[in-house]
Length: 271
Image (cartoon, rainbow, N blue to C red; front, side, top):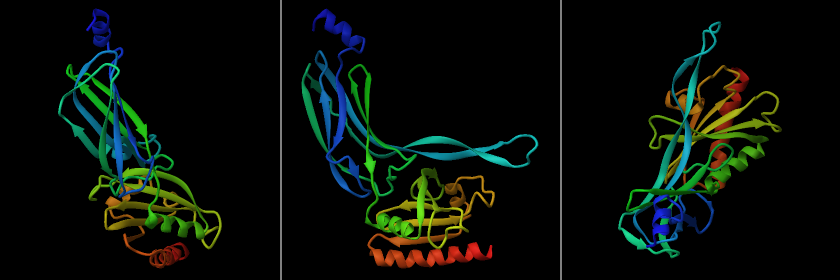
């Protein structure tokens, strides 16, 4: 290696790069996909000690309460972002990556069932990392899109048929579940039977291979709720809960949700 190339390498200039590419950037929870990890050699040969890929998302949590202004006797929960690795892959066998050389590694990826849909505040990305013989890390990021599977699509289609419009989506922590977080969907009625006397509908979802768990609540802001719905679910403060089996038909999903909404309608009328 020439003195110039060695100097540039020590400065981190002209080093190897990495990125991971999934065969389809639009994914659904539970899907299996092939991922190709592309490694690009820098200006000179490098010894690569490890290659890592993480499928990551973030969610909101409430670690504690902070007091509001002195003239108010209420408190509001403080919120912070937490990062979560949904899936990991690593190759620890070291190898030589020549200058200007490209190597591709093929990896099978199964998208976890509780992978959040990438709507509104919910984001998902691949974090690809290579570590060379000096311990230096090179990291690249790639965003991904996750769309509803057939079961979730049935739920959303039914809500839209009732005149609801999706207003906000975010991932929230929830203690006591098999996953550290779930996804909250806030809907507002702009037409249909709930328009005019239901302010909003909040649904908290958490998915595994066999079931989709849903917790429902209505008009939370009107009733003075200050915590996130994920915290309310962990504390048992919700209007209704339903568990939908993954193999349910669209008609069966509609039937179960109709019963939930009949209960919600009674809550609105008699509360």
